[in-house]
Image (cartoon, rainbow over all chains, first blue to last red):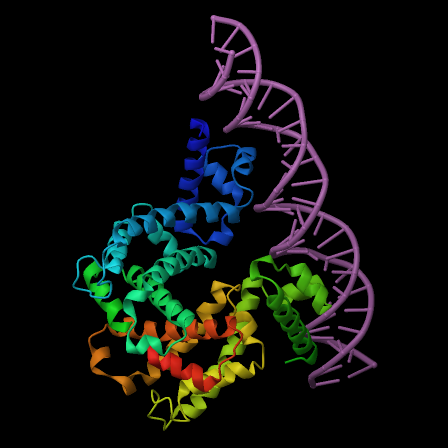
Amino acid sequence: MDRRQRKTREAIFNAFTDLLSQKDFSQITVGEIIQRADIGRATFYAHFETKDFLLKELCEELFCHLFDAMDDQKSGHRHIFDCDAPDSVFLHLFRHLQKNDNNILGLLSCRNNELFLRYFRDGLRQLVENQLQIFDTEKSKKLPRSFFINHIVSTFVETTRWWVDNGMKESPETITELFLTVI
Amino acid sequence: MDRRQRKTREAIFNAFTDLLSQKDFSQITVGEIIQRADIGRATFYAHFETKDFLLKELCEELFCHLFDAMDDQKSGHRHIFDCDAPDSVFLHLFRHLQKNDNNILGLLSCRNNELFLRYFRDGLRQLVENQLQIFDTEKSKKLPRSFFINHIVSTFVETTRWWVDNGMKESPETITELFLTVI
DNA sequence: ATGTTACTGAACTTATTGTTCAATAAAATT
DNA sequence: AATTTTATTGAACAATAAGTTCAGTAACAT
């Protein structure tokens, strides 16, 4: 990819995440983005069809990065639900989130958009589906599969949200424990 | 309240819920609302400052109605977590939702707005907080209070969402059971 | 009957979106 | 090094929507 393209793309993403941490997605205008990114209006539209697509691509970058890192580590780990096991996928996820390399948490905070959460959930859902065979307990067999997956995903998202909204005082280990307790 | 005011207010609410069941909140314009409600533009703004306030007031009406009905029945019911008990608050909630008197479910469906969900959660949170003393189990005592409340509320919302998105094939009783199983 | 309040409709300003295009600068190709 | 391709620019443009204003009219209350 052209260096110029990479640079403007980066500039747009940076400006956009900055703005997202300050205000709701729906109130961010293209004008603000290009002003902060210091690029021309036409350039923005050369890269992204709409603001929605910008969010979509940003999410894809962030989440693919996050979930790919998980996928690398998942093979061979059986005790996904043993919170003492240092290789718990969920613990890894919480640790990655805590680092907050690319400001995922800013976006996850409650003032932000449903669209963003949808991408996060979709990524998680895939991850959980891949691991599902591992935790067939007596309890889970009574439940419809999609319901059960949905519940795990939702609980993970809401746990993370609670964590962020309360200042992330707890360690990833503690949060993983809380999460596994309620599951 | 003036009959004229009541009528236009009603007309606006009706037009708005109609539109909400068809498309996302963010894509609904004031123009569409007033056209469908058959009122003047200035009239709309005489009633509601913005589209956001319209949603806010609509939610307040719907949820106050819903949760007030619950409050009427809550006193004296101790076995809130016993799903066989016919007086389970959650069962009542699911039943009320199934009736869908005022199209809450249309609004709850996944394509709709975060703002709407926030009001729903707020109402639920209050309800759950009021009932919290009832279910102090060994499990729940280990958890931070706000985390636990949040978890119950989230699980209720997500259960309902799953129910709606899957066509509401299950009876309120079944859903209550699923809900209580994962809690 | 009179005064008050709510609705109307049309015109208007402002803000935002998304497009177009000719000019320019950077990258790739020969 | 010269040439071609590609990305960016900036400004102008049309289209849509938000929100305001106000004089005129209809409904309500006393």
